[in-house]
Amino acid sequence: MKKRISIYLPLLIAVSVIVGIFLGNHLTSQSSHGGFQNFAAPKPDKLSTIVDLIANAYVDSVGTDQMVEDAIPVLLKNLDPHSTYIPARDMQEVNEEMQGNFGGIGVQFSIHNDTVQVVDVISGGPSSKLGIQPGDRIVIVNDSLIAGNGVKNETVLNLLRGEKGTQVNVGIKRKGIKDLMRYDITRGDIPIISVDVSYMINDSTGYVKVSRFAEKTVAEFMEAVSKITGEGAKQIIVDLRGNPGGYLMATVKMVNEFLDEGDLIVYTEGHSQARKTYSATGKAHWKDKRVFVLMDEYSASASEIFAGALQDNDKGVIVGRRSFGKGLVQEQIPFNDGSALRLTVARYYTPSGRCIQKPYSEGTDEYYHDIMNRAVHGELEVADSIQFSDTLKYETKGGRTVYGGGGIMPDYFVPMDTTGYSDYYSKITQKALVYHFAFDYSDKHRVELAKLSTPEQFVQYLQKEKVLDQFIAYAEGEGVKRSTSDLKISGKIIEYQLMAYITRNIIGDDGFYPIIQQIDKTLQKAIELSEENRSLTQLLAVTK
Image (cartoon, rainbow, N blue to C red; front, side, top):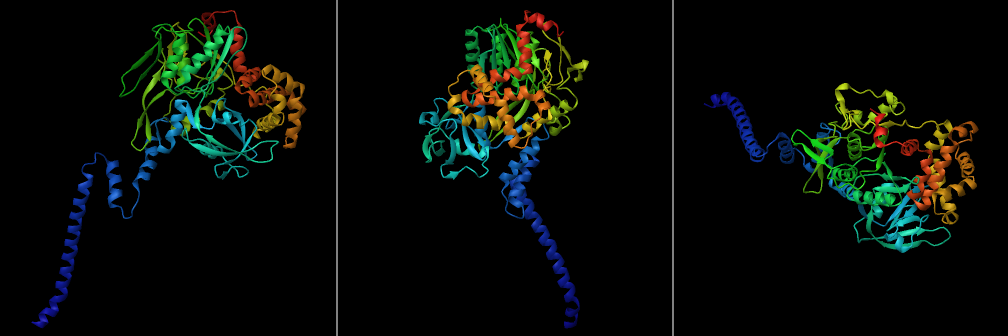
């Protein structure tokens, strides 16, 4: 008997082990399967299931929240270039930009030689009320030293901005005063201005520069146009160059002021969005005025709607270069954690039926390289380099031909001005020497310059002081040698840039734009057209 046991014992042990492994695997499988079912079954899709599997079954403990945050932009990258995710930490800045105000101390600053220098103080703002002045150096914010340590613009903004009613302690160094000046500043609502400037170019033409379309843009625009109208403007130049767009309703309300009742302004339509049409109400204040709109390759979205509505209704003359071509409509969907998704839901179409949006089938990188490609292909210099397909041909209300395919093509093309470029100009531009010199000059001569009040006075004073010669000497000290031949080409541009920036440092954009106007070819073309004794219909007839 013992002999039999000794013979079969190894076999019995082996069978037991095999059965044990089988049972163990079977039980584990059942246990695991049952556990997964409990949390995976209610999930409607693979993504949600995968996130729950990682959270509940992954070998290590991991936080899935950050995984989701990182995955969302990757998911959206497969859509269009303008569908985007806004993390909760960025929502305040995004909302401030669109709402037209933020909590801050009310100064404009520049970082120069690792020093935060106050360029301008907003009238009536918190800093203005305490006596902070242009030219002051901000050295300390609360307990943080921000001078001489490579401080970045974003860092300063984060320190100075904050919720309205909160306090920030600022240490100021002022020229002529030995000790540091300390201020407890209560933050207030600081406006983000949409209309940079409005002024009369001549007795009959007014100019308005609009930099964005936000909540308060309509009110600012109405005030600006009313002002120049009161000063005798019979025609208006609206400058939308570099304007990236913004609120749809802002541009709809603004262009409504120039159109006849029933004129189509824009319509939107998408796969899941029914067509929505916006038409003029007939309550236009300025429909009898000639309008000239300045555009360039950085004018996008709402800017293109404004220009397209006037162009297709034959109510305005578009001057400049082809606009960016952003015609996708985003809807913002908020989440409980304060973040939001901006999802493209439709496209913009001009009154003639043109889709503003340029193609993006080659991917996001190629999409944003489009402007560089335009430059390479010569589009920024020669209008004829732009090829349009007959399949994208449309007609304006008056029968003029316009083309779709991306952006708004101007009625009068003005190439990028490179006539004043030279090696000398390139070198001083790369080093930003005009900007730095203008700031230093303004800072050193603030007392004398403060006695001047108009752009004309600044030009007269600065030319008398031979500011260009002073700059040339300054540039030599910065390693850029004088070139007589190059200065014959670029001297006028440099001189007017210097005078414009110096004037801006003292009296703001009201001084800058009238001076820079003298070397602005696109604006000069619009002025030339405005001075012609021809009706709007006659001006547009040549573009048929």
